[in-house]
Image (cartoon, rainbow, N blue to C red; front, side, top):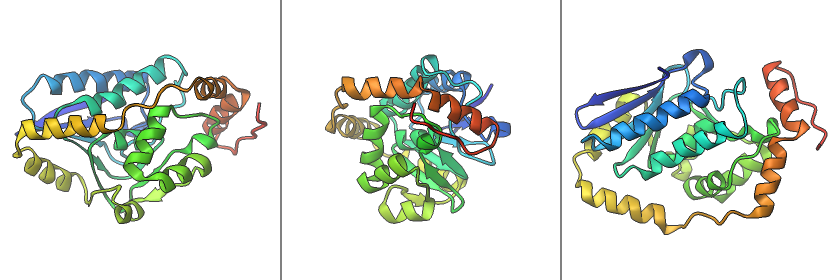
Length: 243
């Protein structure tokens, strides 16, 4: 099991546990996250905290097993699963939250991070492309300037920088996140569920732009994407050609 579910009174604690891969998510881990989301939805939990086993929150996608089809479908289901829960969700981030890690962080309602946490979408270093949902969510949760720098310059941000913009809500580790979750779990559940629904529907999902989708699919199938994966695994700079 690469995802663990614990109960701390009214709080459901979900932990990604692949420390040997710095909690990089593979297809099986994403399926486990979706399964756990279902368990939490059927329970009487009043808040969910998502975290990663030390030394990272989630270092991204496990590129040893990423395929553009089934993997991306599972990632999409896991991300949207957090937004569909009627209870508040808090990401407790300690260490790298890159790629899929940043995606998981912005899928949660609230974020608590330690000073050693770092965020970013390094897709441009790998020849990959994120979906429109991620672009839209990133701009809403972290703001246009941060989203642009992450997506077009592969820039990373520290927790301190994002605290200053409000993208990270509180400084601290898992204990601080659990304490906040305990406070939130005592609030009126119907109020929170309705407010979450209103927030999630305040900006309707972007229509699927055919040109963007074709470009995304083409990028995933490109020689550059293959080069990016190989270079990452071989720990060398990629040699992109634009093909």
